Image 1 (cartoon, helix red, strand yellow):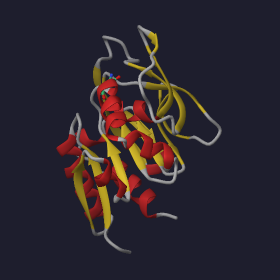
Image 2: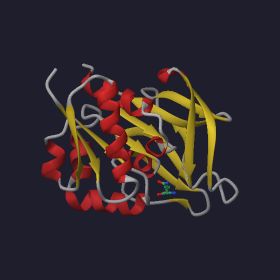
Image 3: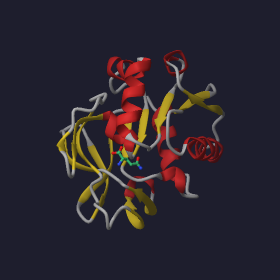
Length: 202
Ligand code: GLN
């Protein structure tokens, strides 16, 4: 196959970590391609897939609105491969609620048919690492959670990839993938390999 172009949205979050692990994932999947940081619509339009890092979802969301990237995701709905981690998952979802503040009116693409709760683990669970079971990538996986959201409910097109104590923390829908945790902060590229395979599959 031709060389694939993956972009990491460069507004906020562990941007370089996503770039590094995606490059590693390409290599381990035996694929040629390039991974670049992107911030403008023109840069996104030429990609085969986009990764949206964690950070602050209200900030990332408003930058995406301002640059037209949010509208691009709405227009290409489900056909353009997108992977959102943590805040990146929030900005893809249909509905967002804050654990303390209730419904938020923050901008989201609304292309992933899930409703999410922000900052869902509360103060005690602010930041933690835990063992997860993710059959789609071959089983046990160490998840890093930082002020993580969870998915409260999913539409019929959404496939749940992982639960933590019964709560949904990873999903896919068509070419869209989302995790409440941060796979770029581990040494394990399997989640990114899974996304890259989604990019190249028909
Ligand atoms: N709590 C953040 C938000 O709602 C997400 C945290 C993260 O991306 N690590 O935007």
